[in-house]
Image (cartoon, rainbow, N blue to C red; front, top):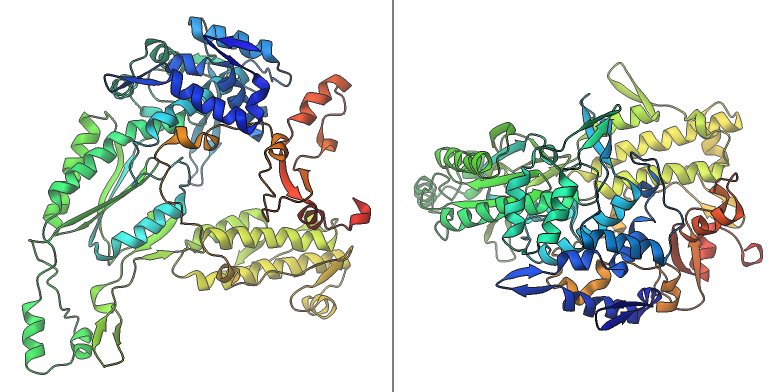
Length: 594
């Protein structure tokens, strides 16, 4: 037991439903508002219960085992460790170590700097991220999608599909090194608008000024937050939240009119008896595109990647771009790497790795209802698959090669020593990942081309393994769907239209508004406790005969370690809760062999 003021907290109680309620009550007691500013943040971060929750959250990630500058890895911790770390943070003597910088190659040949923190710093940063999320997650606007609960690239693209139908101009602004160029003083002033806690601000300055070590040389942190650290994404979101507020406030002033004015030329030609279909072919539409009394602005941001859609003339679009550039330069003190205005209905632009573009006005389809009334359909803006990028990835992975401007499949030699069942399972996972990511695209039916190449590569791999020499012999033995039965388990190659049976999970588009009421989304606890908490099977939701599936098997633990060193590592392995039936299906075994 550990005494905290007049309340007593048991570290083990965090692992129970009552523990979650206790954390929630504790947060509401420690974190309070005074003069519309939050206090008690440093006290909350220093609490051993919060530190334990942060440790349990990050220890399941593979990134936790990446060593920092001191090359120390925490595999055994106890209550005394968290109490000691709590005293260091509370008294202000805690000093974070500099992060270890590594350079990650980018597709364009450049390198992205990545900062790797030490194990103790990761725990403190996760606790800091948790506390900041409680305060700022309800404040973030719905147009922000990066690094947020229940948000993703697909939710950003779904908002784009819903709002950008009438857009004529796209403003594409690319911030130069967003994470590396965040001004510490500006971010500190933004935090001080909502936080009045000297201990927390001291901790903030220690983390951002810790710097990094690259090739044995220590560099001071004059600006920016290390890309790759746990707390960097939410600090960047807080920093760019000012940009969100600025643009949405400007939108309220910019938007004008209720509906667009009718096209006088179109109405005149309709009066003399010309049919809409004929006028459509002449590229004459019913609305006046140059109506200056109607304006709209739309804005979507995912981390530092954002687009602004405008339904107005080009002069107004240029004024908007200059206005936003002025705010980025002078208020956020950041530079732009690229700036351009694109005609949305004539050119393709890139957003979040997808190619996007609008439909030309004169290409809008015309439909007629049951009583022969004319209906002009305003289709959703297009989201296109970047095939060149996908093909380049498949070539680099060895699935195919390019010959005479044609893509030819090839066998993956590294798989020929694996069972055929596992080979098909691997190829299925590759295509399923591509299909699931691009299922939101307008031209997703063209995924059958990628499906053909991946399936052909799979057939060639099986032919090389079984020494069948030709594709026809493989298809003759296993069928056109490559059906294989092993250990009473059947597998076949997935269909190309796999996306038809999967609906996008876009119902949770917006972040929760009161994180303290749903504290479970921000805290974590031991996975074994999920059996105690009766949360049910992760796959089917059943509450009958629950078991633990270990994603990282015990055989992967370093055999050179001693018995007592293996115990905590085996406890902290990645695990999920499954019912017995789902567990058997996952291992493809019968009940007699498990």
